[in-house]
Structure formats: structure tokens, C-alpha cells
Image (cartoon, rainbow, N blue to C red; front, side, top):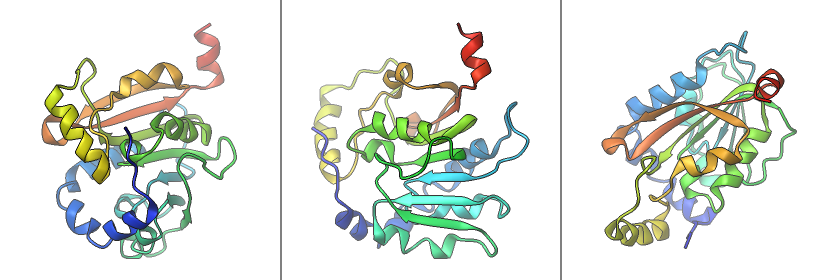
Length: 216
């Protein structure tokens, strides 16, 4: 079962969202944004960033104002609360949009960030593939969410707990590694995070034509 909340309930959650996550995620947010902004061998500069599931926009305050940012979210309530996190002079373009169907051309963005969106989506792999589709070759995709450890099997107790978590918002029994064979990107880093590694940061880089040729 995947019980995924509709936008109206996320609108309701938006009223207290900042109070709930600002302090708890303060340090880890700095970590995954740092990974997002790190230059790779394929980079000269970061041309633009897409945040899928921008929420109330707390990551915006950590991104250099010289980099244009596009943020999408399914909730109007969340988007309405981004203003206080936008820095002076920062170019931010916000859209209400479904993460399963991004309304952007292929290879539109140099960086894609997915903070706490994969585990609340109806079809996580489709969301990841959409993020890859709009990412430029050599670009970096950073995911932060709740995931099982690589070889971990959920206990019956965790399965029962997950039943209730899914009704509230999210899935806590996802193994990210099961999706890697179906993605075009290579895993660069897996960083265990808060709550004994229950939350993790995954850093992926989309393969370039050179990568694809060398692997043949």
C-alpha cells in the first residue's frame, strides 16, 4: 500500500512545516546542499538548479544568489511560504507541478535536488527518472530521504509501523539501491544522516557520452 497525501493535506501541513523541520534538519540540509553545489570534473560552473519538492524553500537560503533556481511543489500552501527563505537578489522561479510529470525539456538543469520527496511520492522510481531526464549529462542529482540500509530487510514491527506512516505521509521501508540498475546515473556517494542513518543522502551523477562509450 502507498497512501499518498493529496495537495490539500500538504497545504494544511505547510502551516507548521517550518516549525517541525527547521531545527531538526538544519545541519543535514547544509550537508546535502554542499554536495549539490560541489563542482565535478564535468563542471566549469553551476548554471542552474531544480529543486523537486521545494516545500517552503528552506534550501534557497543556502544557495549562492548568482545561481538561478527553479522550485516545484504540488502544494500551493508550501509554495506560498517560500518568500521568507528567498535571499535578496536571488532569482527563483516557482511552479506548482507534479514531480511524476515535470513540465521541462530534457537536459534543462545542471543540478537537481530532491529533498524529502521520493518517499512521499506515488511512484518513486518515476520521480527519479524524471529528475534524470531534465538533468544535463555530467550533472548531479542529490536525494535526501528515509531509506533502508543496503541489505536491510524490514522487520514485521517496522512493516506495521510503515502502514501507519504511509497513511500520514511517507514510506519508511524503501531501499534506494533497488532502483540503481534502472537509472542512467552512477552513484557517487551514500551518506548516512540523522536518526542512526535512517535518513540518507544519495549523490548521483548523470553519465556523459564519454562514460557510456567507455562502459561498452
